Image (cartoon, rainbow, N blue to C red; front, side):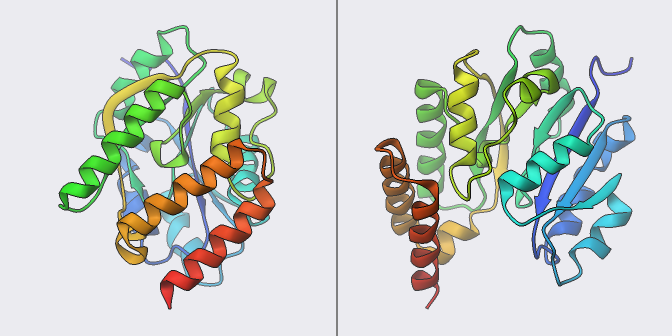
Length: 235
């Protein structure tokens, strides 16, 4: 039986030559069932586009910025269901079956639970809090792999073109329509950010940025704080 929806998986990338092949190979079973994968590159100067092209349905080029890239991918996509996947995240094997349950619901959008790669018990605790916070607030982050019906995406104007918090901002607007459809089967996102910059440092930074955003600080100033912190942590 064909799936009761047409899915477009939109993958924003920039300088992802090291991992884009594995990311897209994991999506081949979805393509084999007639769905599409759209890669949106932001001007990579490594081999990202060359490696991606044989493993997706199309590669398009966009201005740099995840919100801009995801909007460009949605505009080029053909599916009636849009799924936004980070390049360092893997979908569960039964993604299409889980999305079929969503399609038969009356919700316009949803997200997955998330699990961090790696074996540290702290990563399990971090993921648990991320998922519980999302269930309580209805807000999700890009790590949780948001999916949304095309008509709802277009009615709300897609992602706001801001340099940070575009996922949180869009979640807030979607929550005015409905709570998210939450899939317990987790996506697995790479824990390299937590390992490279330190788990506790990253937790503090993310909560600080989110708190300041709720207090009304601009995404532009928060993006400067984020970039400065990441640079300092990498020294």
